Length: 311
Image 1: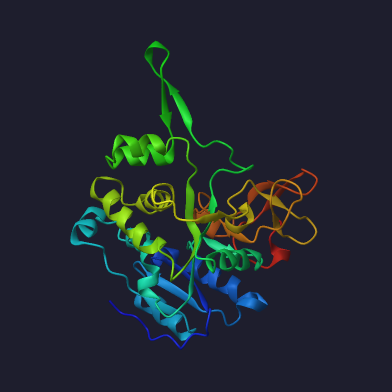
Image 2: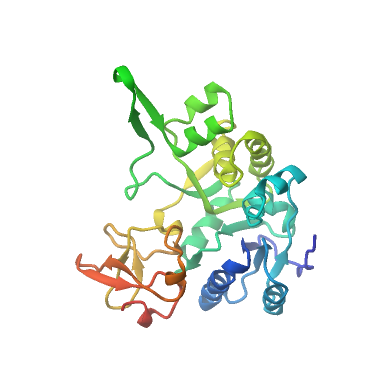
């Protein structure tokens, strides 16, 4: 474990933390560049969880004043279960940011495949977290109204299917808990903020340790985060989709801004490219989207100068 000494932070200071392995290095670099491109982010503290970065990549980040931390595995058992997927150590340490960056009052996590288009999302994350609430975007919204699906079964029965229910069942959680999660919304752990003084951290770790025993390692962070709220009744505020925007994609043809798909077409603040990261995307290949008038348009989803977004 190696942690670079942080500079003494200001009172009520915050840090943006991300993480990934060597394959994610170009994305991590773009995320950091997008933060630094904003006036508010020029000197904003940034941390990186090293989930398998190369030595040269770590050195490059540190030369830019980035706080790089090599996180521990929660246990030898989890490390062995991960096998070749060593990057999973990142997911397992999302509930431990307060331990790795203890000198900061507010911890803001952004997945390695996100980038910052405007500062509004960061402002909202801080505003809510500073009230000792979980600041997060849910996966249930006007963009994704379905919380669960129902699969038909013999004799007219149906089987509930949803992220929380399915993963709770796989983790062999008690029947009461599984049933309570059937119609609950998922908290997207790809972007969140919590104050270091919040009780959420300890309870999140508690539930994740339970979920990891028999459940999936990769999804244990989101399942345990939901249990922290729904079982322990800890407070949260659901932020607008623009704070962790995952599509559908609309682009302003005039200035190249990625927009919320529905009116009033606000600019997406934190763009999350999950599901759209492919070698072709990283090489600059565009996707099909629509402009403000619903006309088809080709656009690049990654961080780039706005003038280069539209193909």
